[in-house]
Picture 1 (tube, one colour):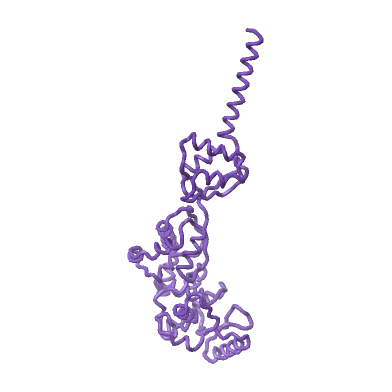
Picture 2 (cartoon, rainbow, N blue to C red):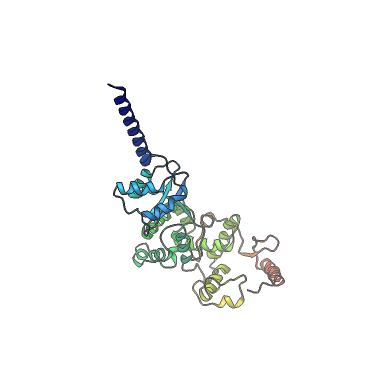
Length: 341
């Protein structure tokens, strides 16, 4: 074979090798330059995806070329975690299969169902209206012996794992399952010993939650309220009065001080006018408040008043005389601070 033919064949093989290598790199080469979370919405097309990946892709145009070769035209809605070193072929396969990575969502105690829906909507694809509609679905409430007020109790503040695209119904169902799991045999037995139902524990926990932000105080406060319940006394819990005021004035109304006139509000949630627990919880209690009730401290306290010596805490007392002295001191402090409402 002549040198000329050998040269031509070698050149052809070399060119073919280069082309094959370039073709391989185009499809399977490392394209994504950093870890990135890509959100794909229902209105996004391939051009939108190309634009989104441009800041961290070596070859966004190749993404479109591979998509065309694979007859891929519509990415599935989702939240996708892209890893550094991924190829455009990996990206196309991921978007076509809808292979999302779940995310962890969290929430703390929320005063209302509306606020809770808004908090979740900030973290998932579902909007707050569709979430709220799902929570208040009449059949769902009826099937689970819940009301529009009590449904708030199935959402235990914690961290949970969901797909970004989870539907409101599936979100609701998973939260209900988590709530039932939360009420394990140990907690059920503790509630039984207190002669309280799950709903009643949640209601009392919501009052404890609002009464004190100090976790160390919650078992003490819970014990005080249980003492009152067992004696048949009204709870006289200021958080329930604040709840009543907000029911009248609106949830954004600020109440820094409970007034005597507030105690006359005609509501089943007014624990100054009614004995026993309110019909349902007044806010979303967190785990420390719930367990504070279930592990309530046994003592002889029947009265409490906010402390002016240790802000954020309470002064507890066994007698009305001592309580009146504490309350008088607190009222004078409020007046001095100019807190009228």
